[in-house]
Amino acid sequence: MTSADLLLHPVRLRIVQALLGDRALTTNELKTELADVPTTSLYRHIARLTDAGVLAVAAERRVRGTVERTYVLRLSAASIGLDEVDAMSPDEHRQAFTAYVAGLLDAFDRYAARTDIDLLRDQVSYRLAGMWLDDDEFAELRRELARVLRPRLANPPRPGRRRRILATVLLLGDDAAE
Image (cartoon, rainbow, N blue to C red; front, side, top):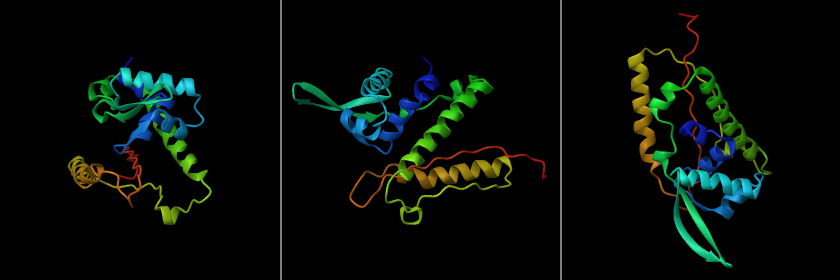
């Protein structure tokens, strides 16, 4: 199974997303976060991700005669390599992008289903921006974004911090206005 096949399955993608931000979750906590996923299916997907090295067992403890495991994400294993991306067909890229967008829709739906949403208070936003950049300017923008984001990605959880998900899509726009 390729990394793309492994990671872009809708349930496995949600498991990976649940563990983003250096979270350590038990199978019960994952079951609570993915309540719409049947338990047997969830366990099967956790096992696949663990066997592939995407998830690691951070702790184990006995609970009523069974072993409860706490999982963490191995971020280096939770990505699709550049060689694999390069080898994907346009249809495979469409499928991957569809899985990505479906994950975003699911995350927003779960947020919107809460009874206390307030986009301004919660600082939730979504927007598009168009920029005219040559390749060097675009490379500089990407380096600047990485420089700004890198230290924040390393922030550990603590009181007062809320886990936030940043999703980016960089597309080439139509050049008709050139």
